[in-house]
Amino acid sequence: MRLRPPGLLALFLIALSTATLAPAQTPQGRPGSVLGVEFLGSLSTAQTAAAIGGFYRRAPDAPAPRYGVDRYRLRFRTSDPGGSPLESRALLYIPRFAQATPAPVFVMAPGTTGLIDRCATLLERPAVRNWGNYEAQMLSYAGQGYISILPDYAFYDDPSRYQSYFIAAYNSRVMLDGARAVYSFFGRPAARLIDARPAQRVFLAGYSQGAHTVFAATDIAEGYAPELPLAGAIGFGTTTSVEALMKDSPYFGVYILLAWQQYYGIDPARVLLPRYASGLALVAGQRCVDEIPRLYPNAVVQLYQPRFREALLAGELEAYYPELARRLRENFPGLNPQAQTVPALIVQGGADPISPDRTVEPYARRLCGLGRRLEYVYLPGVHHFYVRQIGFRAALDWMSRVRSGQRPGNCGRWN
Image (cartoon, rainbow, N blue to C red; front, side, top):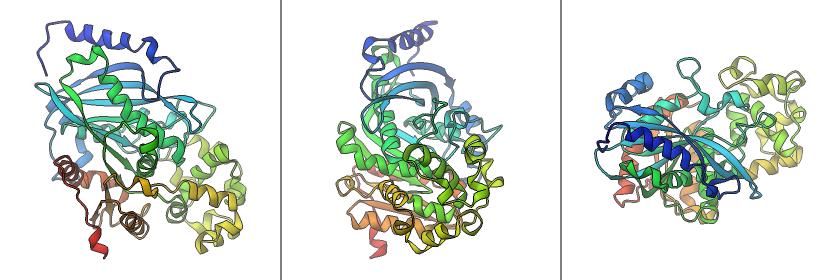
């Protein structure tokens, strides 16, 4: 990073914050407009390595950070599926280069943390309650030279609404507008002293619920954000079929039903046993993800109504609950034939109980059949909770190859 005279950095940050109040960035601004900026501090390379801490203790081959990182909190404009303006928040991580350097953009969609405001990903404090340690993950990618942004899902700042849980039409827009917000941030004159500059390559990545968001974003990118230079999509612990998730890891079903009741009018009483349907908003609706396993059984036979359970397992939900079946189809992302030009990486753990290989591999085969250039990395014995860490080097390698002009893929393994 350039040497700056004493006090110049402070003046720069004041200018940057003031610039966010410009009329062009009012609530009526375009999706991706930056509405506010807060500088959170700088970390040296050694401090970045220390902040990552034990996140990679199960991945001893994970590369050490190469750069320090500057951290910012952003507010940015997004929109709902009807085009009405919404506001979201994000954490932005910028590598500290020694000279002006173009850097690819890495946009991360997090996994499940909960439905209400206090469970928002940006509020995570891993030393107190670890929902995924996204701070460590984002520092990891910024420390490798990626301008990295972690957007929050829609409505995490609205106490009257649940977050848009597994709702593709909302979450895909938040992710693409988070990518736009990076370019909006660097487009401000006040950002001219930052040595990192966003290159014309954007990688979308997501974990679990976030992988659902990633592939939903590829479905709409050409129509919603055609100016974004999407280079690739990455799924860790890929959870794209909500129907499969309700079978494979049923206790996530309580969040799905509660959110979809609010957004779609789905009735949890038609799905859950009465003792779990009763008071759902007061139990699941007030708990973050680390509390759910001790409140609800993770077994189809113990959680669901018999008739729903039979229909779910037999693939006959259309007959039992057609509106729920319709919403499940609507929120099965990544299958838009026009979206297959975006290459993809799926990193799959062989011991993943939440998104097991028996569910994820058929999805990968479908993408291959649609013509998407896909690389499927299978990690034997790796749990859902550790697939991001152990798959870190594979993700860096894949992005490096894509950046060099390659189109990596191994769909032929299934032919």
